[in-house]
Length: 135
Image (cartoon, rainbow, N blue to C red):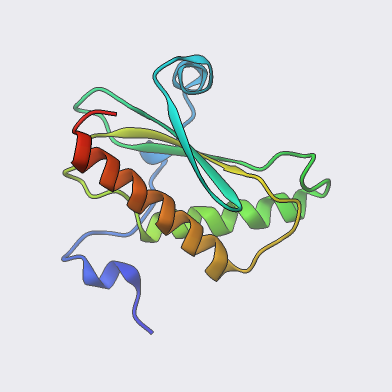
């Protein structure tokens, strides 16, 4: 079985801390600002917003407590989404984005389903970026 990263020439498939969204200002802009847009591929919703050039794309994952009361289930979903994103990140040449993946379902899904949803969302995002140039 080949890793999705093996097809990309010499790109390291990691998720460094710089690519994780932790800035309160950016999070507030993403959720409260008028510049963000969203799309859904069940069981995930992607909320995204372009960032200034010279930065890297950053992401966060949110699994509401109302979906899973137990932390171990919320953590499992976060691991699944993080791994799917890590394997299928936006290419380095694309406009940097702030991404938020929000879990919508109150049932667990297997990793293949989660990966398909993440890939579908990122593919649609790439199409919107390349088609319109701006979001």
